Length: 161
Image (cartoon, rainbow, N blue to C red; front, side, top):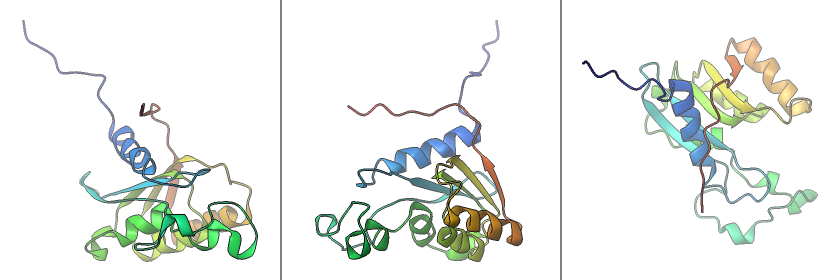
């Protein structure tokens, strides 16, 4: 009798979102961990990233809270999408790629996504949907012709003990 291959394996979307979710586990942010995975049209991982402090900055010297002014983490943290773009060895390799990200990109990351030629955003969560930043993000992605869609695959969960 001929043996059949597995049919419960991960789809490409599940696989790449799983990598993005695994990357998010590197983040030290106590309230929002975000991961990103950039993939070329041939299903090859080009780069990954997570939200965190810039290279060489001591994580313990920066506020991680939602405070005001200089006490806000938002002035210091590099977003996962931005890090994934910067982590690429060859920026031209991003042209035509897809980015899988655990949280819909802000307007700043959307601009970077557009500038490097990424053509599609697949996101898992959109909890900031109604904020001005994410409204502007959708608007500029639309203007640039970058597609975006909600991840619809199985939940890829990692049990860390």
